[in-house]
Image (tube, rainbow, N blue to C red):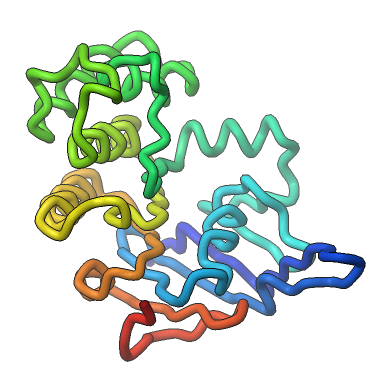
Length: 231
């Protein structure tokens, strides 16, 4: 039987804005089976990144629930959610989010060190950076790397711990078309090799089309099987 890595039910997120309640997400439901790739598309401000933050336990819903591998995030305290992220979730961000004073190798080692797996962190990070074509750039800091190289470091960091789930927020958004295509190829190769479940937010129609399922987010509502990507 296929296990759902993500089960989100009736998610709502509201915030106060100038004395009024602003609804960012409204009644969102999402199930993602293990090993599946899912794209969430939609215009800026529609709630896509908020949904990713809720799935990661980095934000909390106003109502509704999120289960990751059967674990209800509402039953975990802040430390418990951080531990779950460290053990089970990898992240890829549009703006890379690398630690500027760390080398490429140290950036990729970081998730393993945080999750208590430091013993083989250097070896695992070196192997994965070599696999993504950065074996000669291990000791370069982000400022000395191109945008595409920084995103390859970020991909290696996301996958180094062999997470069950990888969340990607506009992973090609800051890259030119040719570099973005190479990053897409690399991301899906790493996903296939690791067996990770992938949920990504994107405006890129070509990237979304490579996923098993596509959803569209409009004004806080999630609609299954989008016919096209809204730029």
